[in-house]
Image 1: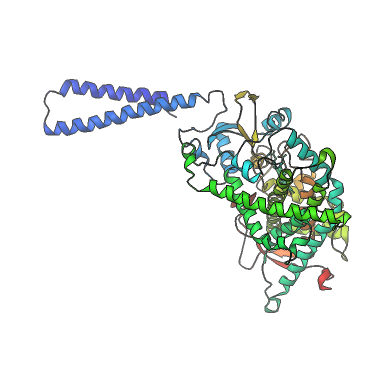
Image 2: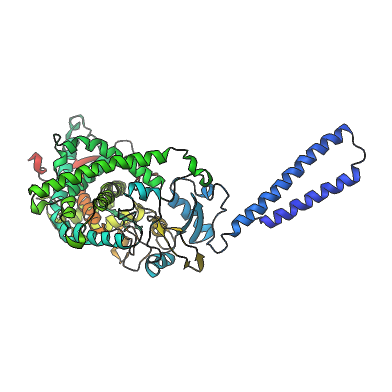
Length: 549
Ligand code: HEM
């Protein structure tokens, strides 16, 4: 490749040649030579401008000397031309073949480091975990993260530590998980009933009705997470809050999109022009956060009233009741409570639903895996009842299936942005303060250097011990201080839902469809299948689901 220095010297000699030609032939100027003179002048202007531009670019690049390598960071647009907007985890993985496992980009006014090797991931998330444990001061954090009060957006410090402790003890603790298992059971049974009824329709014509497994997964998670957070009462249509729930859901979806747009900095596509707000996002994010806050306040006030009047069942307390009853130093401000609702509500439900849909798609596409899983479940559970959460630990192949789905389709293919308040050394590079760091979770889990035939769906690979504490090839929930706090809740929900769906039904693709496109992804709160998964369900139970019997 031609270096900028070579380019500069060859264009200088070009200019010198032209000057000599002027000196030699410049005395007999005809009309033709006048024309030639004009065009030579413009060539000279172009050449001079190019020299200036190259000099500026060289100077511009020099400021990144101590940083890891990466594609050219252009003035005005930074690395945008190289990284684009779509499926950045795949683009970063491709670029790593050229620039190596630690790369530097300029995106939206920020210095962004992307890591794609287990060794450097270990350095970031374990050896230098404390240095990288903060979050950047983004507009997402300000507006969607309730002024940085949400766990996901809070900078490293006492407030974030307080929230992590509350989550570990009161929200995602094993005891709380067990106490809420009845919600997950009821909701999974509800979808089995729905699918059973739908699968019977059209059978008389010899064709079952295709089930939209996207809406099944999303409505399952929507119901579970809403009940876990707020209990049951907002599903009753005469409750004042039930009346605003519909538009609240739309606002939550809008917040997810805007949180993504402002995840790195102020969301300007072209850094130098970010103040123009070409997409009108600044106004939208402010308005949506005000609307969300209004509903959070209504929910909090309603729950405060319940507590004062004692109108709730002790053993069926929802998250908001639990958080409001905290006493002493555990007590939370209303803003922190709103932040935690925001952590759990949109992000919690969408990520699990996205994995559920992908896992079902892989099982339908890989019928031998589906049969093996059904066989394991039948062996443990028998044929006279539905699989329960308490059976899961006796079906190790189920865990392998979920892990393999998470490896191929991590709903968070990049970690959330990590941030260093101070300068730090990383893999031999000197990283200045206030950089953003992403670990490319997808690249780690799909690189042929570390995985045999990585694009194959082969749950058996997890029968060997993979994904232990020091295995940084496999990090669907990340690692270190900022690791996802809800891993147990996510696993138990996904495993139980998949187990019931494959125990109760045989699944196949609709007539005429030969395969499923797994590579097309779209982004909301998580990386999801681009097109909804449609499939035929054939009941295989020797008994009817509870509501049908
Ligand atoms: C399959 C399901 C899930 C996966 C794969 C997943 C993955 C992740 C990842 C990769 C991170 C970023 C960690 C980092 O920045 O290093 C994260 C953070 C987080 N996740 Fe999850 N997650 C899942 C489900 C959930 C659920 C169900 C909830 C809530 C109910 C949740 C709540 C959070 C929170 C609050 C954080 C921020 C933690 C912090 O900044 O301290 N996640 N998750």
